Image (tube, rainbow, N blue to C red; front, side, top):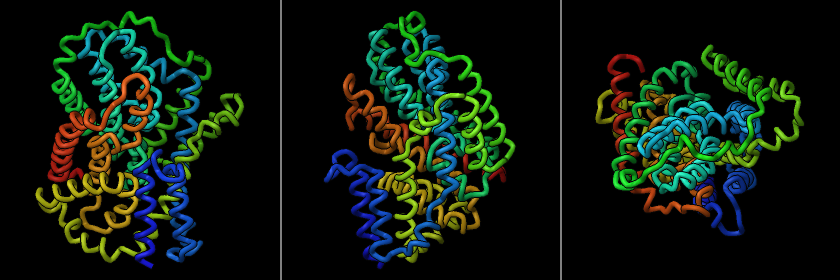
Length: 416
């Protein structure tokens, strides 16, 4: 049974890595679904175990936030906000700084993948009118959205998984991770500014006078309603109310209050992503069930990860490597079954969220956010694997080192 589970995982993971180049034109959601089906059909899991493996609370959080984001998008709220901030830039360095700050902070609130989806065409339009090279700004968008998303439990999918499996509240997590995320956003800006110093120095631009408008016109009434509901959602997170219930209530209120066809809002939900997650839950449950005896051998190292700086560093590096080998979401799905069992779990949950998130900046394939930017820009300015590595390697090393240092300081101060 263990051999079957490993074979199923390897085949599914190969399809996930291949993406659009996979055989039979199978995409990532299909890979997750087929993996789940195979785990049950080949007897690795029973049907009851498969249903139990699906974390419906996590799916509810994603669904609710997707509905809220849909209304923020069609109301023109996000486009207008991003454009207003971008147009305040007066030189290339200020423009780069604004891109890093806007994409990072918005990603903490709206999930990084969505921000990349919205801002990629906006950046391409802005750089075209300003007649500047879009490369550093596209890279800043991708890497900053990953870095910024570490600041909240709802900033990215792996953080949502950590939030559901750990005892961290939304506000407790944000109070510790926001200083870390803001520090690493500065590091990310500095790295890109240094790597592209010649490109930025020879470019002259002024975004303040760009003749561009938001791609989605601002619908003031709907934008105000969305802003009120979003504020209420953030207040409920801060108050410690259940994340899944808060997200679903916010989605329900907007579906009624927006007074627009609900089928449009439901069409705006990324159903393939939800299917992908449901399939991964079942797939990873099969791996954990049959291979836990191997994974348990790592527990002594995990248990000592908060005892000294060396073992803690090993844990963070292992999480970065694991997230790049298996992809961050599947890796966290496996790791969350074991992190909560060790004495230093509170610290390690923060480290797992940080390392798995920052690991996404190592290569262009490291996170969905990177792929969204690359896909959106491919017709105008293709981003190659090597171009991304120029920024990805130093950003990942420096932000992970800084993030690990900050978390260790929290542990020293008994704050984690």
